[in-house]
Amino acid sequence: MNSTATLPESPFAALGLLAPFVRAVAQEGYEAPTPIQSQAIPHVIQGRDLLGCAQTGTGKTAAFVLPILQRLAERPRNGKIRCLILAPTRELAAQIGERASAYGRHVGLRQTVIYGGVGQRNQEIALKQKPDILIATPGRLLDLIQQGFVSLDGVEIFVLDEADRMLDMGFIHDVRKVVKLVPTKRQTLFFSATMPRDIADLAQSILIDPVRVSVAPQSTTAEKVEQSVYFVAKSHKRALLEKLLRDQGALRTIVFTRTKHGANRLAEQLTRGGLDAAAIHGNKSQGARERALEGFKNGTISVLVATDLAARGIDVDGISHVVNFELPNVPEQYVHRIGRTGRAGAEGRAIAFCDEDEKKLLQDIERLIRTRIPVAGRVVMPASSADRTGDNDGRPPRAHGAHGNGQAQRGSQQRAPQQQRASQQPRVAQQPRAPQQRPQAPRPASVTTGPSAGNDPNSSPGPRRRRRRRFRGARLPQGELS
Image (cartoon, rainbow, N blue to C red):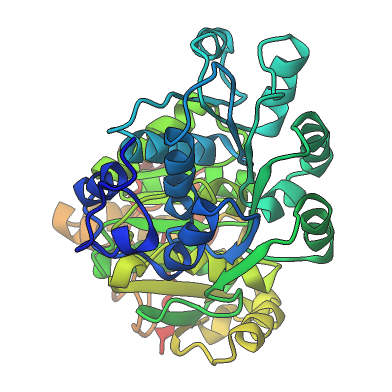
């Protein structure tokens, strides 16, 4: 490749990138490098080992993919894997592969992506094409090495991406196995969003005289992200979420939960409430995860409910809102979560829900980011129900000993359809009213107040009618959002 064919007028050319890569970057719509790209690219081109600390959304992938492509393109192909990139998740591996294809479109390099969760037959066929670059998750890579489909004796450049995720997911043992299989004479690039002791020790053991680059320390949040917190009981988080999603026109939103089960349940509840939602986490099949991500990218899914591990592989522009439905146990995760919005100079909103048990977590987050998150509102329980708790799926608490509710329910069933639809929307900032003045709309047995119609001898026709009316969304208490 002609090393003199640079484009001096391009900021990327000033970093030492050659014309084919400058042109590819321009075709992807990028005009100027990000800070980590400016710091890392020249050193990688020179062949130095590198230790990079950068959070999500900083342009880290291009910071190592572009110079790697250039180094490989300057030397003839030898039929061996010359660059190995390890990633913790299937989604991240696939996205690195997409970037490598886009940036290397004008040079004749081959790259292959392998990961678990899918059949390996197609991956075996791709490996027989003798790729220059192999992007892999640790488990599937070791499987294919053991089966004789992969040899790493020709690796010149080794990249470990998101090393802290490797540690969290229990892959460090596999990573150490892989390190022993690559030549000791190599260039090593090591990236991690955080640098706990175990990760620092691993980096020290595999890097030689590395250049250190760091962008956006783990305690800083994106400047153009508007943060806010709502204090809300756990049982009313879902109702508040539905109201905010509708009122604020959240076109593309990521909602974070702590657990896979919680992500599944919340996505199902939002879907029943009339929102286009899907869940993504490690227990989902590869096909289901790819469909959810594709729907999120093309707009058919507006709300993606995710766990922290799964979200690390999401690389989608234009995310308008990030909602911390449950605050993370580790404060640094808050920074990573809200880094999904407000990218590339765009504005974004980060909303946190905090219940009574999460106040200590909120304090830890505010201590880390060195700022107080503005309080956007408080969902206050009515005095009559302040000493009771709702069930664990976000529905309001039941009242006790309220006889005569069967009569009120039958009266509510006779109202006009438009009144019923209006009453089913989450309501805030309203004072409680007597049942005879404003009877409540029919709701499923799990959310009605007082005895269910099925247990009330005076209300036999109730359950069948309610089953025919679809319940659309959760309900906030008739308290106050202040």
